[in-house]
Image (tube, rainbow, N blue to C red; front, side, top):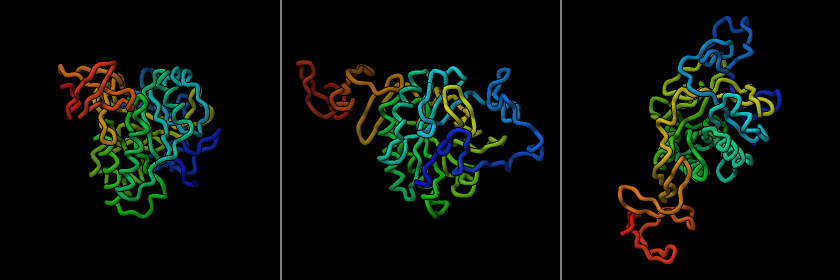
Length: 314
């Protein structure tokens, strides 16, 4: 698709994205007179800096967003270059990014926090619900310690009203949240201001605005450039600055309800087998995708167990 994209979509070699908007409206008249710092978007003297080397208050971690356009990635080198998290492109509904699995497993194995984003083309709440359920299904097999993002920027969304797009976004995010994951909305300043009503969107904002302006209500991640360079990644990559400690809001252990089925997660990963909680025993059946067994009798290793409708052994 000509409009195929998302963070980092059109980045190959030294090229820049033609499908994304570089917003310099917040910069001062000194922009053209100031050289870009060799240390742009890196940590200098204990503080992350912007493109000119000026400190950016409140940044807690530096990350990247990646898609098939980045190709093979050496995640150990990425992690060693002060990258703490990676957000990988899922793709579209039923059309996953060919590097998605490789990125998610590689980043997690190298110790990075991981999140995902789905490039949305939803122009109705029904399509948004379908996208959200797909995103959750695609996320459930991996360590998700960062948000699940709805990437809202596609021209294929069409001429929906501001209220309609707001409802579409809230539908997606609520399903993600109700499934036990943490939603976030990715978009650019123009979309956030003119295409949707973010005062009605009670979710985190992943704010894409290149230059020095990074503040926006509920902004927790700032995409500061699409021309970043990180060791282990060939060519340009989008650099992300996180202002929220997601380890404090995304639990590493607990229940998630996905497509009406209950799963239990430990260390951000789907758990299978027996689990004792509050003195009650539950069984996440490894022969059934790790779904919690409920409302039936099941023979496990030669013994018969009766499970109530709440999943606990009777």
